[in-house]
Image (cartoon, rainbow, N blue to C red; front, side, top):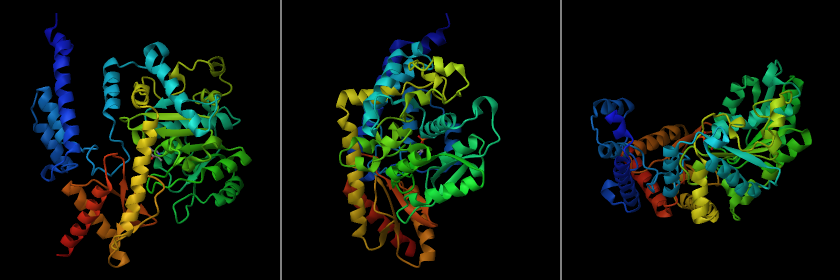
Length: 474
Ligand SMILES: *Cc1c(COP(=O)(O)O)cnc(C)c1O
C-alpha cells in the first residue's frame, strides 16, 4: 500500500484541515466586519516581481501556514473599503457550496456525471427566467463567466440567423454585430474569435450619459448593408462596465424586431435588477431579447465563475454548436439534461448549487435585497459627491458603479492628478478603487459590491482623497 496516497485521502486529516481552514476564514470574515483602525487595509500592495520572490522563498508545508499566508497576501473583497472591480464578496454559504462542488467534482458534461447539479441547473434557470419576461419556451445554461456566455450567445445567434451552414462549411461572408462603443471588450473578442475581424464589430456612439445612441442604429445598419456587411444582431449593455449605465433595451429590442436581428443583452453585471421592484425598470425590454447573459458572481453573491445564459427559445440554444444541416441537434432537442451539448465547456463546474443554496436558505428575495442595497448606496454616494466642491460626478449612476474625479486645477493636469490619486490609494491599501477613461478623461471608478459598505465608508474615501491631494502639493 502506498502510504503517502493513503495520507492524501485520509478522511480524518481532511476533517482536521477543513476545520482549520473554516476557522481561518470565519476569523477573517469577523475581522472584516469589525475593523480596527490599525489593521485596516483591503490589500497590501506588493510589486509582481517581489510577490514572486516571496513565493520562490516560501517553504511552509503545513496547510495552516499555507492557507494563512495566502489569505494575508490576497485582496479582501469582504472589506467594506473594497470598491474596485465588479466581483462579489461571496455569501459564505455559497462559498461552501463551491467547496462541496470542488470535492465532489462532478464533471457535468453528461447527465450522470452530475445528476443533482444538472437538475438544479434547470431549476435555477427556471426560477429566474420569468423575471426577464420570458415564458415556458425559454431555457438556459450555466457557464464559466460572462465572456464565454457572450461568445456562446453570439455563436447561437450566428447559427440561428444565417442561411449558410457556417458550422460545417465555413464562410467568406462578412458578418457583424452592432454594439455600443462602451460595451465590454469581450464582445469585440467574441466577434474576432468567430473570424469576422475589424468589420465584424460596428460600434455605435454613446450620448453624454454613456448610453447607446439608439437613433443611430438605422443609419449604421444602412451603411453596413452598402458595404456588403451582413449585420446579424445588436448587443445591448445592461449596464456597461465602465460607467454602469444601462442601454435603452426597449429601443434596441424594437429595432431588432423590425429588422429581424438577434437581440442579445449583456447583463453580466446588472441583470439581477430584474428581480427588484425598485430597479426592474432598468431591464425593461429584456422580454424582447433572444438571449441574456447574467453573472451570478457579480450581483448575486456567488463565488466566480458562475454565469447564467438565458435563451428566449430553448430550441435555438440547441443549434449553438451545430447548424440546421446537422441532424444531431434535431433529435436531441429534448435532451436538456446533457448540458455539454450547449456549453463551450466539456467538464464544467457544479455551478448551480452555489445559486440554489442561497435561494433555498434565504429565499429569492435575498438577491433583490442585495441589489437594492448596492444600487441605493450608489445613489447616496452620488449625492455625497455633489456636496464636495472639489469632485465631479461623471454621470448620475443607474447602478452601483459610480465614476467621479478630482476637478481642482487646470483641465490638462486633471488626468495626471486622478491617476496619481488612484495609484496612491492602491499602494496605501486602505481603500481599493479603480479608474477608467471616459471620452479621454480619467475618472476614479467605484463598484459598490460589498453589502457591508456604508455611506460613512464612502465619506472616509472622499476625505482620504482630499488629504492625499494635500500631500501632493507639499
Ligand atoms: C464583467 C462583464 C463581462 C465579463 O464577464 P466575466 O464573467 O468577467 O467573464 C462582460 N460584460 C459585462 C457588461 C461585464 O460587466
